[in-house]
Length: 373
Image (cartoon, rainbow, N blue to C red; front, top):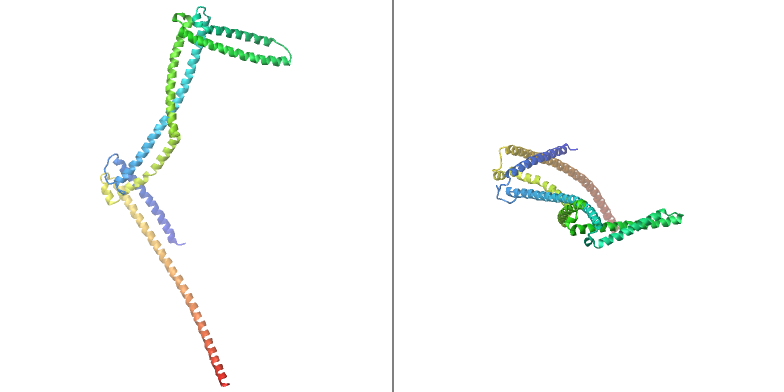
């Protein structure tokens, strides 16, 4: 293998390394210069690779990242708020259930006590009749269950007893539940319609507690209504704009993509400082410490150009040798062809001699024929 090709590969590797090093230097310089500019507007030209054009591109990328980050923060805040709302609503529903349960217990106690008072017929109304009717049914069903429990017999009697017991227990449970609702309704009516002086002892305490629970329950219901309304609005917003989690993922991918564009912008801006015209335009932001970077970049550029020239020379030398080899190859081909031509010329001469000899014999034979006529 031609050793010169190995040298070319080595030079190419070093050239790539120098280009990479130089690009990193100029990227760092470009980034530092753009940071120094900050919010200032030192340039007015916006054509080609002029500083103003690159600065505009840099700020556009910064703004796109900042806008996406702001949207992500808003979405994350909305997600957190929705979570807080769900937790607050769940806690509110539990508190509401507890207040309703406590209030229902008080109403049942007040209602049971109210229906037992003999001098409140005007408040009791039909509720007293319902209570009496339900108590009679409950008493009848309890007796029926006792009778069924005492009944004895064979397997068929036992099966009939089990079915009747199940029906009686279901009716008993239903009537007890209905009686509970009667007491509840009576308690609510009693609390709202009976005069305050009627309440004494434990009933007075229950009445005060019931009023307190009503106020607290009303406050909880109002708070829940507000929380649910806010949750509904957030849910509608998420439904209209799509999943917030997916939107955040999309924005994060976009930010990562935009960040990948910065090195090219930094390199373009830093490269301006290596050109005489560009250095003049950037003179207001260049500092003494930047000279070392620019000198190193210039040395690397010179080295890159020298390597390119060395590679070009080696390739030219290889090409010359290839052309010389081609020439020798062609010369050999010509020599071979010339040898073939010489051999062909001798063969042609022999054939022409044969023709002449044949023509001579023909002439002699023709003469003989003439003489013998």
